[in-house]
Image (tube, rainbow, N blue to C red):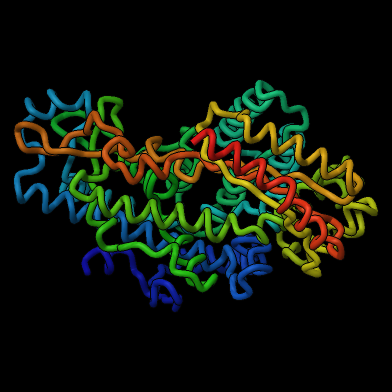
Length: 526
């Protein structure tokens, strides 16, 4: 109740997943900004509603739900630290703290924030706003819009033309460095047509939106940007533990966007499951929240840990995530939409200049994003594409989707790129094209590693020999046979028919002449 009063949570929104969500007036001002309101018209899962008709929810309500989960996560971390301190599960002497800092040691973050004037309130303010704004840079139809994103140089021209951005050299310089590093990494991968990603647009729009709200300081904006994109290194929020200073912002980044559990994943699993009308994305929220605890490390950062005693709750969460990827996001009809979208984006010369024959200014760029809904973007594209790809996009719109002829699945690791099964699949595909004619088929390979990032974020915490929490030497997936098995990659090998009328004939041929060969190879390998 104390933090409720401190934050002035005086407004509310009713949500089907969370019930009543309380908001501050500044959060309402963010929501009412045109750059945020546009998310009303951007679906969370693009064309998933072609499979699950009620899955038409948007990034608008998802973003508000993510903010609510961010608040819950931080409250739980504070409560769990306080309880651990009460039970003597938190280190109490500087000597023990210094001895275990190198591996990471659990802390009571609540009392530490209370010791720093106004830090508790400011931490909540910055976390909630970061979570609320985490998706503000998404364009219509998500990755299809990436083909229209400006390149690095074009984006810097847009930024520098913005009166409220161009004068802030610290921000502009950090963005320029970040984009330079991004360009280098993409170039090393062999990419030539390198365009910015939605996270870069999110940083820009977050600055623009927050800069319009009276009472939000530049330091707060810098902290929020750093929570969303730590590489920007614009802000910090320091607390003192046994005469050493530690930055809390890395923990807040873990809450918003870290594996294996963050507020983004917590919301979209529940929300996507609810609107798709399936049970797969459900998990025990209370048990997951109970497992969270903050820890300090030798790099001077506060990070999120997951208690080993809560490993089964983490298993439950990751199983829900795995099932949603396999049963919902990877549904054959949704994948048909994805395959057709990939085909559409192969069109040459797609770029943001199709909207204008001149260099876009920041005003043009902002107006473009505000004006486009999923539907408007598709309608615009239909006027820009060549005939073949225009037909494919219109077919998606009309739900005249490519028909699956046959498919096969195999488990792989990230190094296992070519197998005898995938080689035979390619041969079978070529035979199908020779027999029935090449234009009738499309091969689609989808390699999914739903839990590949399971050990790249929060660390597992265990009790030390002296009884307090430290970072375990064991990784999360090593601590659970279930998580380890779910961590296998899944390669889906699928052939689609563009000729819907004769798809039945193709399926019959594949059933008699292709699948038995693939099954024999798979059985011999097992």
